[in-house]
Amino acid sequence: MRSIKNEKNLANKLILLRLDLNVPLDQGKISDTTRIDKILPTLNFLIRQNTKIIILSHIGRPKGKIVDELSLKPIKEDLQQKLKLKVKLIKKNIFKIKNRAFLNDFDEQILILENIRFYAEEEKNDRNFANHIASLGDIYVNDAFSCSHREHASIHQISNFLPSYSGLQLDLEVNALNKITSKITKPITCIIGGSKISTKINVIKNLIPKLNNIVIVGGMANNFIEYFGNNIGNSIKENDCKQIVKEIISLSKEKNCNLIYPEDVLVSKNLNGLSQNKKLDQISSNEMILDIGPKTISKILNIIDKSKTILWNGPAGYFENPNFANGSIKIAKKIIENNKVNKSFSVVGGGDTVSFLNHLNVVDDFNFVSTAGGAFLEYLEGKKLPGITALD
Image (cartoon, rainbow, N blue to C red):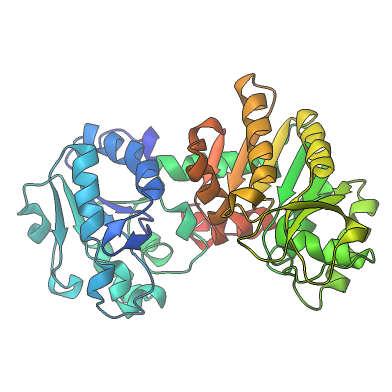
C-alpha cells in the first residue's frame, strides 16, 4: 500500500477521504466519539498539506434510502468543534453534482457528502457510481479499516479510477495486526471472548499455530465448561458446538498451544444479581455464569505477565453489572501495567471490549485499540480484505 503520509505536493488537491464515522447516536446525539477521535490525525495532516477534503462516510444501514435520523449532521458538528474549522455538510444528491467545480465553490476546507449509504449503488459496489464519485476528486484515501472487509463502491471499486492511498489510521491498524499475525514477538497470548464460538472459529484456527496461549472467556467459555462434563445451568451458550470445541482442543494439542478456560466462575440467578464464587462442579440449574472466578483470574494474570504480545477480543464477563466486571478489570489493569514498562505489546479489538475500556477510561493505555469489528476478525482469520487489496 502507498500511504498518504509519504506523499509530497498535496497542496490544493481535492482529496476524497473514506472514513468510518458510524458512531452510536442517542436521539441525534453522539454517545461515543472514539471513531471520530481516531481519524483526527489524518484530517489534521491533510489540513496542514493545504488540501481540500471531501469526506465519504455512513451511519447505520439505511439500505439505499434517505433516512433523516441517519444524517451525518451530528458528525459535522463534532468535527467543527474538534478541528476548530468550519465544516460543510453537502446534502445535494451526488448524481446532481456534475463536476468538482461545484465543490470548489465552497470556502470550507472540509466538506462532507451526506451518508453514502443513502445510495443503493454503494453497497452494490456499482462501478458507475464509484466512477462518478471519483470524478469529484484528485486523490482517494481510505482511512476506514473497519469498513475494508466490505466490497462497497467507496471502499473497493473507487480505487480503479483515482490514485489511491491508505490513511494514517489504516496504517496503524494494519501494522498493529501484522505484529499479531506475522511480525510476532513470543510468547504470544490471545484472550478471546464473546457469546458465539462459531463466529470466531476461523480466527481461532488461524491463530492457534502462532500462539503460545489461547484463553477462552466470556459466553463461549461456557461451551468448554459444559464439554468437560459440567452443568452450566441457565448460562448463555451456543448450541451444536461440541464438534467445534473438540476441533479447538485437538488443534491446540497438535500445535502445542496452551488452552485455558475457566477453573472457577462467578454466578447469579439473574443478570442484575449479586455474585457468588463457585467451582465448576457446584453450579446449580437455576444459576448463570457471568464472570471468571479468582483462581482463573490469577492464572490468566500469570500468563499475561509472561507474554510479550497480547491480543484481547471480548470481555471476560457481563461487565454491565459491576458485580461481574472484576475479571475484565483485572485483565485490563495487568496488560496496562506491563505496557507501561514496555514488557509487552497489546492489541485490543471488538466493540464490547472497546466499550468496556471506554467505560474505564483506559483506551489510551493500550498499544493499539481497534474499533473495527468484522474487519478486525477477518484480518486475523487471514482473509484478504477488499478495501486493503484495492490499495495494493
